[in-house]
Length: 255
Ligand code: NAI
Image 1 (tube, rainbow, N blue to C red):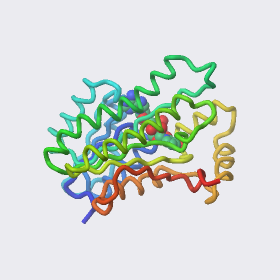
Image 2 (tube, rainbow, N blue to C red):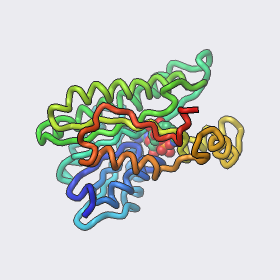
Image 3 (cartoon, helix red, strand yellow):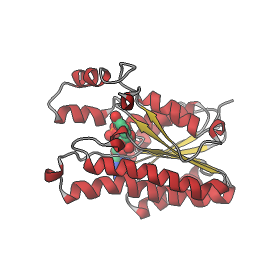
Image 4 (cartoon, rainbow, N blue to C red):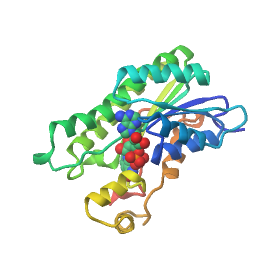
């Protein structure tokens, strides 16, 4: 018996990184899983790698989370092909870092579009199913950068926006059996942080070591760390928890 037997989970940006780790965890715990990512071939390839429980299915769907048409088509496909939707994780994300005076309007718009508009469109498309069935779980992905991070005015604003969005959806959807929470990861070893290392001219391992030295548990995080938190928040064990942002950062924001 898995915690997600008979459930359908949709994870955006799950062709790799944190999203893929979360998809793997939901699959291992019995869910059918839809991996939504920009490139359908990459999404399908990731879906094919999941370890599925008996009777569970996985599908990879190509969609830009910032496009309403793509998102509506994706959610319709999930419901048609996997038989419903119970869990949504808004994980897709990008960075376009720069100091304010060098940040372009495109850098700003793109980051807002993927993180904030993407979470809005997916949540709106999913909630009609959640409300009708009086059951649903939304897990949004914020970041420790929400608290402020040099060179990330766009990303920080979007990630703090996610926290306000989470609290508001929790208020609106709670009466319909829908829990809405967020996870704010600290440094997680993925291609996103590897790209940051490259941008700073640092070796990936040195960058990870440097980050590990700056938190109390003295290690970087991995997608599995976020997957554990996501599985808990999306499970019925967390049904009295809503509107919260859980920092999963090795204590980095304490010091
Ligand atoms: P990643 O770059 O490894 O993966 C992001 C995925 O999102 C990629 O597969 C990409 O194709 C997809 N994606 C990007 N734009 C999209 C769009 N418009 N539509 C659909 N899919 C799209 O990044 P990572 O590290 O796995 O990050 C996942 C989430 O966690 C992001 O929201 C990120 O901001 C957040 N996060 C990551 C941290 C880290 O240290 N890696 C720390 C805090 C938050």
